[in-house]
Length: 433
Image 1: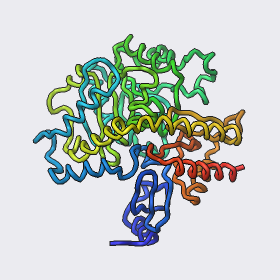
Image 2 (image 1 turned 90 degrees about the vertical axis):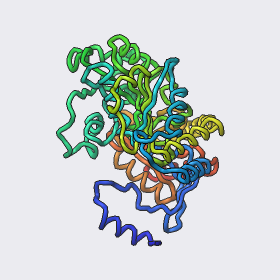
Image 3 (image 1 turned 120 degrees about the vertical axis):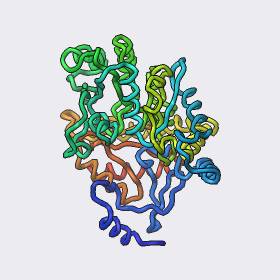
Image 4 (image 1 turned 45 degrees about the vertical axis):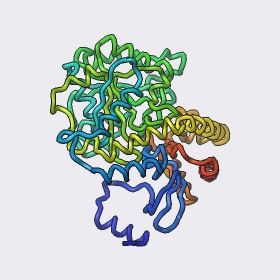
């Protein structure tokens, strides 16, 4: 059955509540690589990637072939009832890829939020402690626990309380807007050292099961800490027997040019969560961690009906093949350099671009009305997204003030598509002046 864009918009308004927001007035008909084609025939360059899900590109032939082949064998048995090879093979590969020269184990769930919840369960069970420390600007999901762990109130938390207990929030290493009013590197990365006093005034270290952090904060504005930050967190966790959980849901699967963003800092987490681009569009998330921690919870204490679904595991195995065997990680590094050079030019040319940050091709521009006061240019960012959409580019904003423009294009984007998209973005920046 085929409907026009107008008909589909009416169906949406009538049958779907407003809560699941739509960021563009488009319905997709098909997608390939870094291009979206709407039901109206309009072609869009995709700088959003389904919110960081399509690192290997839309409908990658290897992923599609893997899904088709698996669907012809079996779709679902529930791993808890009848086991299957894709689950254990994917676990083995992720265990090998995760940082750290120690035994690891992996379990699967459906979404990023589920991965975070399970990581917290493992951390609490393994340490016998209740408290979790999270950070300002963090986003970890929309379930009760992960919504509690998420920082931004509107739209994620407003009206949905009360929230889960034993979650404590500390300042993060947001150098552009330092919560302590300091300047890097003269600050000595005191934001990490602040945890020592945090243990006195907020929650005792002896009660803390885990500290969980995104290596590059996603929804919070692609906030990227200085090189000393995560090594300091690792030492603090080691000092007090606290599990360090790294949330790689948006930053993992090659988004920064490495399998895991935390690799940029040479830190070995106790537990890593992944989702989004791991399944190239199919719902799957992973919790990979130290074997002695992951194996602590009793049999039946972790899992779920659909977790590690055979189709999703097969898709994820194909994703890993594309990243490593087909050289997409190297391609991502080259993309990151091209993208960074162009965004740095934007910062030099347009006063509204206050900061450019990130790693590899996971980059963002923070827009400000005044570089001295750093007043967030929230309205302008929203206008920029709209202007770019009108010219055929799908963009996403983020950040607590909605003033950060983030780059999440598929890593397979062609040079021609990248240049066209960036030219549209520059036209939008010019129009804001």
